[in-house]
Length: 64
Image (cartoon, rainbow, N blue to C red; front, side, top):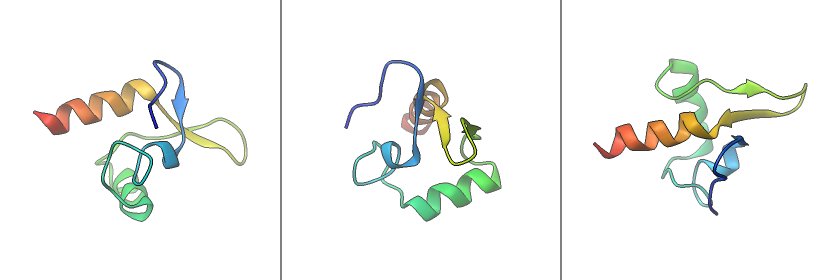
């Protein structure tokens, strides 16, 4: 699954099996809590997402 050029993505679009990062959902959420990964944005009471720009920057920094 490709990420959009701009906007927001949900956790299932970030981690495996559909996302570019080979992490489990639990590992991703723990990394967010620990400050290793970008903070999410609450779009509504039940929807949490991440800015595409933040995810692209994370992927870029991991590939260096």
